[in-house]
Image 1 (cartoon, one colour):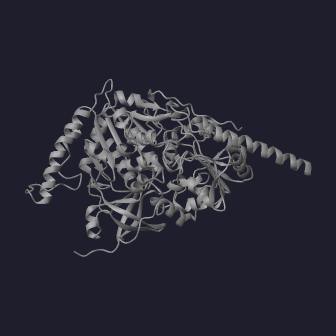
Image 2 (spheres, rainbow over the protein chains, first blue to last red; image 1 turned 90 degrees about the horizontal axis):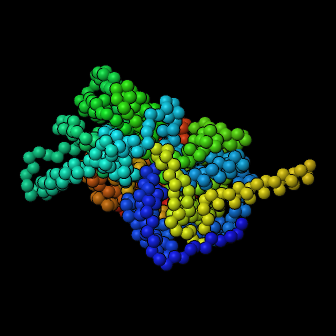
Image 3 (tube, rainbow over the protein chains, first blue to last red; image 1 turned 90 degrees about the vertical axis):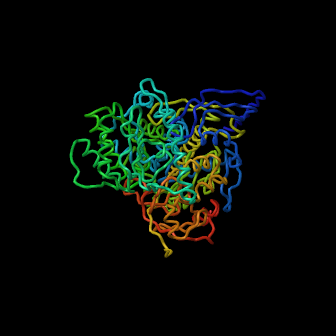
Length: 501
Length: 134
């Protein structure tokens, strides 16, 4: 297929409301964008990252044509040439990996599963370096969870454990938890603003004391466990508790911040489970947290009406990994005997949940699926792409809508670039720079429609607001063309073998 | 005060809002470089090592070493912890031990820090070329 999509040039200014933001698992669907001459010129309601994407998507780092590495350098080629080259690599490989899938639509992910099955590859998504351990934990013990709408209207205790929504999901608090006006629970925004004002005064005094202008009577406590349990633990309304190894911006916003020692979340959760079950602890501190604080924390858990734990990489990437998630879910299960409690992973990419959902409904498994035997197989540690890379078992790779070149450990990337590397991405990211065959793709949710799954597994439509640049296709279309070409090559080879026989 | 040569710390990697904004501008952008080629350190640790704010340090793990700009962590004391935003600089030294579940150990692994005010922080192109030859 050689048709070229010509951009529609509209001179009038148009404002589109209720656009879904294709960045993180929050999928905020209240973005307002203003379009002029087929470009986004203004936007409202988004966070800093959303604004950077909508206003910077056409930046200088955009890939404009397909590229193939020739004599060490990436040179522009036609779409047909790139599709044929990619299909040749994939059709002739024995054990390719197909990785990424989290920043694209579920429609493209579906074609990806078909392609992986056709070429007998390992299909894996970014969950493997993100919430893969959470999925393993859920597979062990199940998960009591709810939609974000339920949490917004009803939750009176919000816990963020090992995650910093202010940095990674900037509007999570504003749209789904403490700073949103729910039907049964009110926003805590005003009380937070009062706290900020009072803290600003204290910070000024502390700064003056440090400069020697005034004498400070009480030195600023360095630990969050100095000066007794804060009264905020027993305040009315929605409570926000943050547990992390360092005080983040979210930690500063919290009514109560608990600083846990690195790699000790597992024992902290187990200690809280014991306290929730009215057992006594015969130690003074657990994971650096004094037991008197933990008792207050356990009381807050048991005495809430509807609590929820949101957790992030602080649990999945530290010692214990999926066992941390398993015990966190078990804590929630214990709490459900006393009150109502939910737990939810803070999914990163906007459609990583969709990648798991599509992979699971098509193959039976959510990530790390191996089709090399002709049927899907799932054995994390063996069929996960990170392990395939570290053992150097692959002979080709296709990376789409992700950047392992920047986000995988060096040893894994070294093995990836030893073999042919096909990249499909709108931007010249680290993986595109390392690639052998590079396809430019249209931004899902800006230049093409699609479906994405929010972190609570609710599918949300993504809207096309501008036309993609000429000659730039959607991920779904590029994959479909590669799949079609792979089938042609394989049927030709089968015909040749038959004739030779 | 005696200045220590090498500081043994626990390495954490993770997101920052600047890294999130930088990645949307593009991985080769100045914003991404500034957001990811840095390391947050505890102010007391920096004083002990005689490392000034915004100067370069060399961080070494069993998986490699990388030069980054040290920045004082503004929100709390984090003695013995360093925090590098996700990106190719962090991944130059991250542990790749997946403990048989596919997930490398991106947080909570041991590392050493030493002052390196005269060593330069590599750009993303230089870093990829030095590591992967492309």
